[in-house]
Length: 323
DNA sequence: CGCAGGTCCTGCACGC
DNA sequence: TGCGTGCAGGACCTGC
Image 1 (spheres, rainbow, N blue to C red):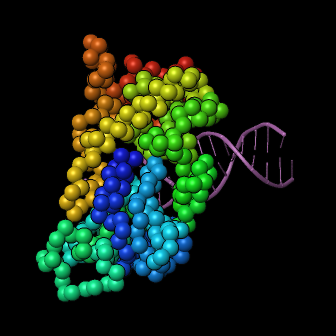
Image 2 (spheres, rainbow, N blue to C red):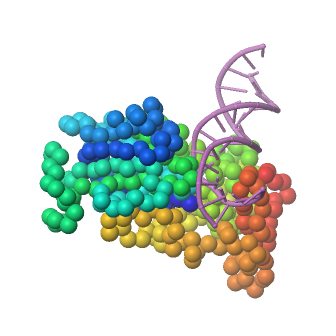
Image 3 (cartoon, protein in one colour):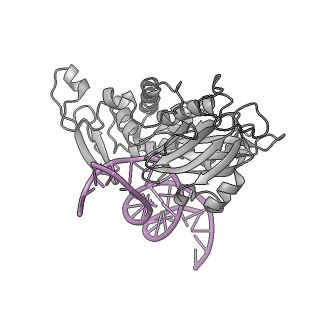
């Protein structure tokens, strides 16, 4: 499941392979994957070609590529959300289609102005690959994700920054240079909900999904049902630092190479195999308690239609709880 | 058949 | 009464 670190890996891959290229063609294979585009698949296919991709940006789990018409600065963006199972892949146009291909976007080579096509450029020319056409593919088994275009508007807190209108309600994430932990703490105090709900609310802090929420809560030794208004400043700070640490670690381990013609987004980063302390670990001993000589198996609860894993010993249920 | 979960949408309960 | 806001839960979707 792509969370912030996985999306950041995709952003970097796009920056390397796609930025600077003009779109020369679009095929929407699955219309539901463009359901958030105004006008749907037909409009998407007709509006995107001819625009040039600028440097990709990200906020939380949202990724966007500013789009510019020839001779103009970007005023809109191609927005991507990977949902539960989305991938963005960069391929050569002739490569065989993957199983759940939903959208393909043909990108011209860099540098060349007009579409110079000379036979199949399959094995010829080569160079550094910058001149060859590429195919950007959106692959998504469950169709929770999608691609759409949207106007760029000034960010509410920093009018010099542009964000897609549909992303304006998403809070800054813990890796954002302008992320403000104290402002989040103030909002925790005003809320009347449990801390895990708050962590998953993308309008409060963005980029956190179910897996990293559980991991960060474990790291900060907080139970998921702890009422946010009872957190003190140091607990809030500890929690947000834990979220940051979990994301940085995942990025370091999941940021596998994208020096091949393949943008890695499969969500199977090494992080999932090696570093999970509670998520998916039900029944196994809590690593922290084990290190202290105690045997304390991880518990899995059903909660807000999701699983929540925690250690009952070092993350005890609070006296007052908000589920 | 139930489970996996990110986001949008709906509806409810407030307070003014 | 009406409106805005905050919060909770369901719908969406497919493969195992």
